[in-house]
Length: 144
Image (cartoon, rainbow, N blue to C red; front, side, top):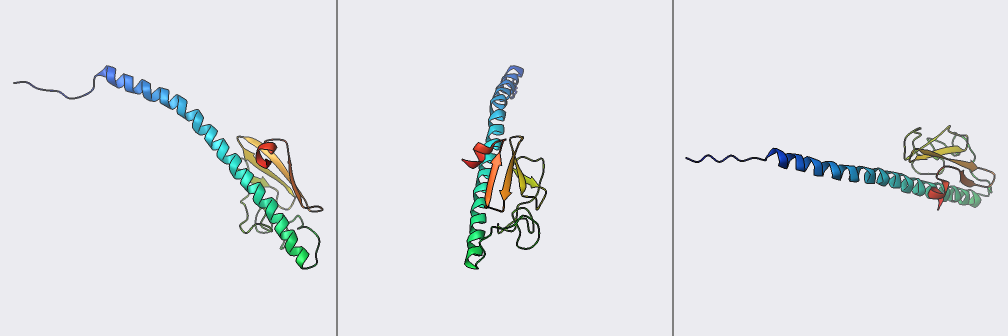
């Protein structure tokens, strides 16, 4: 009587483990870069939305005869009413510091920080002329 045993040899199992290790070593850095690219894309979209919302808010004010831009602050009719940019955006942005892909600020100050790839980029809102500008960090990635 012949008994047949099914299974993998130790050499086959080690070979599969080595191949999986090589694939993981190649894939993990690619996924990390993809995450940074996603954070940059999110930040770029946020900046465009915020700038557009500031202009829309100004146009609404012009219709009523008020030529000013929205003021810094957290009260009704101000920039950070109800959350970051809540005075101009339909849905305010949450204030989350130290996490990639998120905005942070001291509400009402006109200075905001977006973090992407572990780098903070500071944006400043100027209510005198309605500009929302950045300096340093990944400014060129977030505004081009």
